Length: 492
Image 1 (cartoon, rainbow, N blue to C red):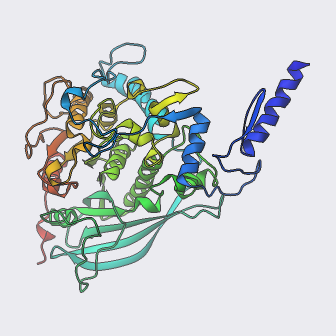
Image 2 (cartoon, one colour; image 1 turned 45 degrees about the vertical axis):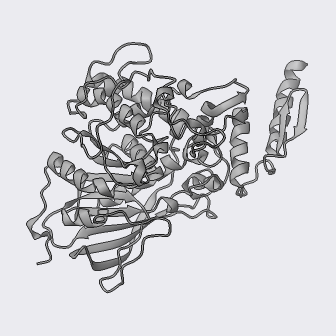
Image 3 (tube, one colour; image 1 turned 60 degrees about the vertical axis):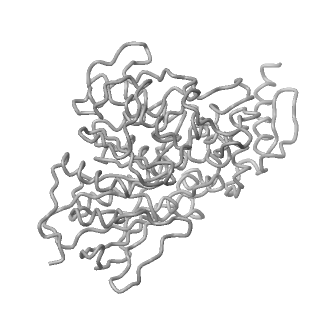
């Protein structure tokens, strides 16, 4: 009799859960923190960030999270900036050791065994999986413009990538991207795709635009001018046109479109992976444009978009090079470090949407599975950098005195770069050339570039930007891809 009854109880429990009630045998109570919806209804969940965050915690059985540290010294729960206390978990997962304990000694073992293990861990526990049923994108040219950048003639295209939304017409996703190439070159040019606004350059007679409020222009030539002057093209792609940068947007954008307006499951993709997916769709278009050297397309971003650029490079092998600007936690910074921003900041309601739901487990203080810490993560930032090998990978930071805050943990990112080196070497290319163990490696002085290999590091003397490193990035990349500025790049 009980055997027959238990399936009925479970079905009744699922029905109650769909109505917004929590259920377990012998216990039924109203769940007020998660919005109600009728079972099986296709209506879109128009949740707040707090509601979506709570829903994921409920799915995972998490009752309480550890609070993320405060970035301001002297405040309650302020972040650690003492290097003596920065490495509570000094031993990183061995990037060249299989889960069965066997060492990885050949490139074949890396590609066939170790790399898939690392990818699986990142997809399941950190950034989430791209669903198999993501709809196709159709690109159209919405506008063309002949204009001038830095005194040089260019051709610009405004591109719109419409994502097929026939499965859920109430959610519309149109990827915004602008492509700009030198007007007077012979043959295709390398291109750096940059996470930005997706905006076209101004017309030749338009007055110069002021920097966006709160974003003062760094000194020196803007990155787009430096790229055009060097005979490169650039593409500005808008991440916000792909997926919103907040938890309330997770039932909208490309993530919501695939889920038909319903909440994520714990291993579903977060915004970082969604932005990376959008960049890959932009690359789909670039591969069709005869003005572009499709074998030499790079990806770039700063801050949260620096994280996205690194994630893009790690998971999309068609990108040939990356400039990772000031990416911090969730990017090039070691999560096992206790310095500045921490895992607990990423699991809180302000940043959790960047990550897979499963990532919240590593900030759990009380849950059905106990408590987890960053040391329980199966992977760390050095392995994310290693997934980029043997392609060209440039890690960039500025200095705290100019606004690239210590919160980003420049030293922890340098340690991750050092720890990724063995994979680059195994695959027959050069790392940053540091022979020290990552535990004791100290980053070089500011403006000292380690730029001789396919893996590169440079901390510039600017702020929270990578424009100050762009000239070094271009020179480094030109040498390695054997690109020379065309003689016809000038105005005459």
